[in-house]
Image (cartoon, rainbow, N blue to C red):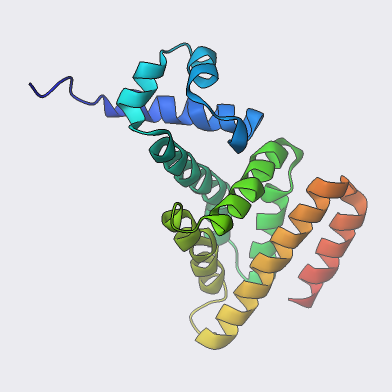
Amino acid sequence: MAGRPVDHQRRAELLDAVVDYTVEHGFSEVSWRPLATALGVSPTTLVHRFGSKEQMLEEVLERLRERIFAATGDALGQQPDLATAARAVWARTSAPRRAAEFRLFFAVYGRALQAPHQFPDFLEHVVADWMNALTGAQGPGTDPATATRRATLVIATIRGLLLDLLATGDRDRVQDAAENFFATL
């Protein structure tokens, strides 16, 4: 007996709800029963849809990474130069409505670094997505090594600024530092 066929749309909706729950409650707080209760499903439904808790968490990481890149990646392709692209990424990532998502992102990043064997897909893409977009934003005439170096600096600086903003809440100081950095590009 093959069982019920997978309803991919329902599974995607459920995954988005799990990600929303995780953004609100944190990565370490995800457990079957409270999650199922919050989503109005049974723990068995979650197991049926995702397999193990580890598989579900891997999918949460992947969807979170996709959401973050979707919120920034489309802005990158529409910008005429690296400084403008970096400013667009900063504006989107530092928006107050995205704070909870980025708190989770950094918590997950730390956890993935502690257990890289559990989260290889997340670690493989967490830099590569932005790297590809930011090197592309520099135009085809840019030396590839230079484009990679600049993109690396932009990624590291934006993520560092985001950590500072999330830790201190000092938006004016961090925004001033961001603008100072963007002016150097």
